[in-house]
Length: 65
Image (cartoon, rainbow, N blue to C red; front, side, top):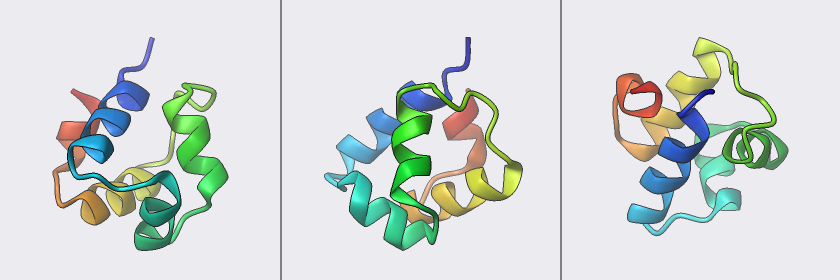
């Protein structure tokens, strides 16, 4: 089971960023963020992970560890 969803939600909440705000900052759909957090999409593309990591000001490894 992927930990990406749990890590994403934890990091996002630590920075007090809503799913909607993160989706806009990362230039990806709100639906993508929601599905990742619900672990309905356990294998996002590296491009998606890079955009999210940049928006959260963390490394990609922080999302997938």
